[in-house]
Image 1 (cartoon, rainbow, N blue to C red):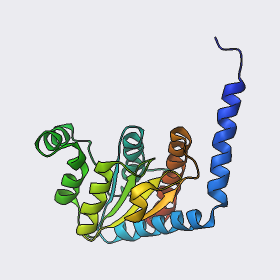
Image 2 (cartoon, one colour):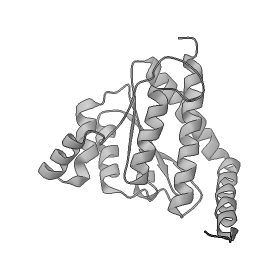
Image 3 (cartoon, rainbow, N blue to C red):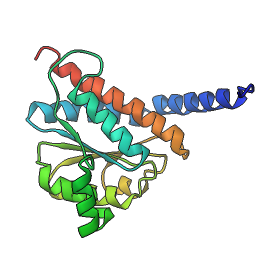
Length: 194
């Protein structure tokens, strides 16, 4: 058993520091509010919220999508949302036939419509399959938002990104879940009586 808790306290402190910096960034908090508003508008218009990410961000995409279709804070109707890549047969077929970089773009081409919102999650902002997904969504006239790390990477040149003020993957991902929960909570307030 580990007796020294200094590393634990250090990581908790680092996480709190990054979250405080995010909260102090007015452009980031305003964009979070606007993304939630766009999600509510999309859902009211018959659209859905589409998420995509790789690795831990793939798990985050599924997690946040599930909060829309089930519930987060309050009972309300199910809200349309999907996480791309969850059909392993489709993902492996696309990767085999076209290349791994197209796994999300091909799904967007087939399931997305212009009432949808795409929220693409990448700590680096440079994942090729996420960039191609953004490109496919833009071609279909879908609003695209990114959740990224500090630099925003190449994705920041393609869409508006909520950029977490950190370069450490773990701290970025912790904030992505927080941001996702806030977006869902704000969005679902529009559907409480339905």
